[in-house]
Length: 355
Ligand SMILES: Cc1cc2nc3c(=O)[nH]c(=O)nc-3n(C[C@H](O)[C@H](O)[C@H](O)COP(=O)(O)O)c2cc1C
Image (cartoon, rainbow, N blue to C red; front, side):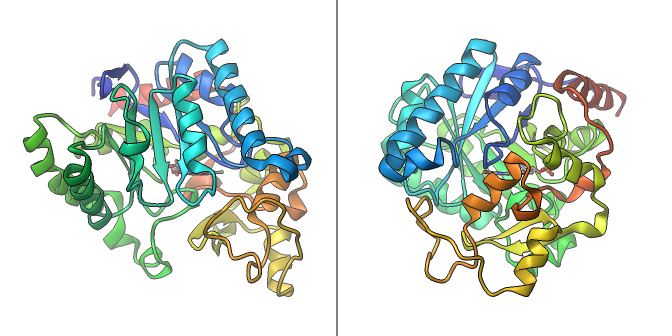
């Protein structure tokens, strides 16, 4: 199969791959820039940045400045296409989005929440708005409300299936019924749902699928099924350019299929992670006590949360694996070596060509 470029608004990336945004601190400037250098789209995660101590006095400012600094660093490393990923459950999400737009980011990827007001926050139409969805119901909700309130449609959609890493937009029941919620089943429902809006606005809404995409053959399969591109997270963790601790990467290399589990996150969504000492501890105790200094998540009920997810994710980033939560996609167990972004993308492109 020939490798199609992906077009998102006025942006054309020659490689139809988006490296998925990964919090906390998993996808920062070095990874995103390396991906963008290869002609794909590199995504900086906006979540959980900045010095923790300094955040206790001015969380919003510290987070914003840390994100601005990551964007500038990435920009100094590449002229390629960069996106920033946001979670709707962040208490300062609007501030982070506005800062990214000021920094010249042209692709805003928004998940873990419905981006109901996003077009009123980002009025510059050269900035491409890309909601992450997991069902046709939510897709229709977004399209209908944006069309009615703002006469605007998304510039692309990321359809994230149930095999993805991090927080998941599926109930536990749906996660146990993978046959009915696979990307192969979901993609046609999304393509059908967007059709009337594509006709009305006379332009395509590219659908980028993510969750369990592992090989070039997987990518070719989804492109043939009508996707315009893929979003990949897990495979990029075990690259030299990904800035997580060696312990984090080693946990991926050591993981067996049965170690990859679904957890309940204080965010209020299920998540996928590697079973480790931290998760074992949570089975033994009711709560890992913590002090919440800055309310980073609107959805987190501090009094009932069993642990601080920001702390747990930062711990694994820094290599304190026994006290860390290690998010991963379902296919993390298949990774058995550290590679470079260049090698990984070359392998994926060869796989597409061969398919
Ligand atoms: C460690 C990790 C952290 C993630 N964090 C986020 C996040 O903060 N926001 C988000 O929208 N998606 C997040 N994701 C999902 C990825 O962006 C991506 O869509 C997904 O993992 C794709 O599936 P794959 O990992 O099987 O390739 C995360 C995934 C991983 C593996």
